[in-house]
Length: 163
Image (cartoon, rainbow, N blue to C red; front, side, top):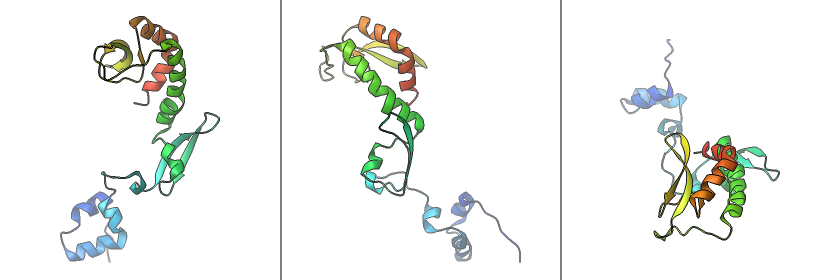
């Protein structure tokens, strides 16, 4: 008797070519393994196991492993960097941004209201104006946007690492 070794990818490629080969392949791998995970999932509840990180109540990053989606896993980021960028850094930026904006609120449906934004462009963090395209860091004037970038560059860089 000789032994045959196949990777899962090879088994997937050979599957369906003959009944004998299919029987050998199914002795090693399940139908779910052979099919692989579907890339398209229409509901969060159908996603399957959840793995990633969330932000704890002391602004610490907590690893998460859940066998299936649940209410608490809704706040789970896929990566530790996303948890840092969007769960810790961005909330800090929004608090700081509120002070720089004062009472100003961007109206992304109003093309006549110019908004000055901080965004990542071609690997650099820059300021520029936008009228209808929402940006997470926006200000009423160029001077406020540039001051915010100057004052909080490190936080802004950390935020954009999650993109």
